[in-house]
Image 1 (cartoon, helix red, strand yellow):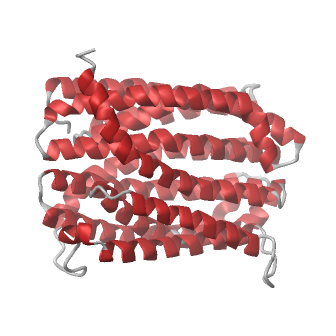
Image 2: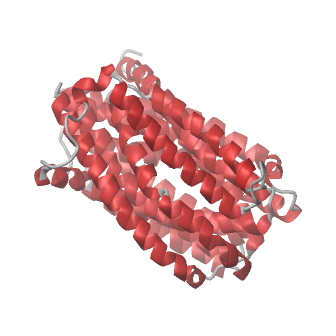
Length: 449
């Protein structure tokens, strides 16, 4: 028991930090889930179009998420080293990246919106998806600004306010969906386009509110930037890109695997695509719990590195991995048992419900390995290891997940569940090798490169 004591002791502070982060991410996913439920009431085709539009948008979104991750890592490290002025500079540079990169992504997505027919989706889906996709494209700058500010707040040890802001955003999104999708309060019914408009408004307001709160909060005043324009350091940008670009690449490999899995499933028709949208929304919602643990673990690892307390790295890391295995096992059982019942909340189409139940069974299989791989990846970023993990994720998702999914589900007889089994195989590979990488680095007490 004495050998386990350091690991058990580190679980509680990780949970304390992870709880509001997890709830915040659940709120963010709940916004997408609410969209799926409310769009699903408008019909199977709008739900399939939402799945397609989200799949393409998420490729761009995760690139931005990766570039925002250095804010949390370097602010945590600066806080561990008791350097609030450095924390302020990392926030300022992170926000500059959010605005410039987000604007570039918005313009690329606007151009791509004229080419959505090239993805081989059903004609009825392509016919209605463009306005929805453009509204999501317009939301990329405010959502990246929000992410940078939220990661700053969490890294400074104040995660609760961002959680409440996200929760308020979910409530606002529900109300706006009711108004714009169905046409209430004298507004014309906009259907799928109304869901995109609701999301854009909610994301803009979220960015404004969290900036206003941080600006007024005395607890972060020492680390709040004294100026916003000019005086940028290219050395600091390079330092942040040194972590952010590999992080974006890793997230790109993973999320494009999911995105192209959705596109492949779209080749099978609207019913499989609608089932995929329901199942991926639910699996993603469940994934927010290990993701919250992963983000908290990464911040605590970074803080320990900044404070030069490397003896705590393994207890923090393997303590949270053990906790995640227990939690994700329970979640997997819930998905496997309740899949068909959950699907019935979204649609009345019996074919969609039956297929969603099958996909939920596959989702139950990969919950544990998915949780472990995201935790290991975040902890490796915390110790500065980015190159080898990027290669591991490339192999996991582009050499294993997509080809196996294509062979089983598209060329083979298994359909959408076969595509999902390919993803499960890739996640398992990533979980094993990323965890082994963290074990090796922390055993040697070194820092990756």
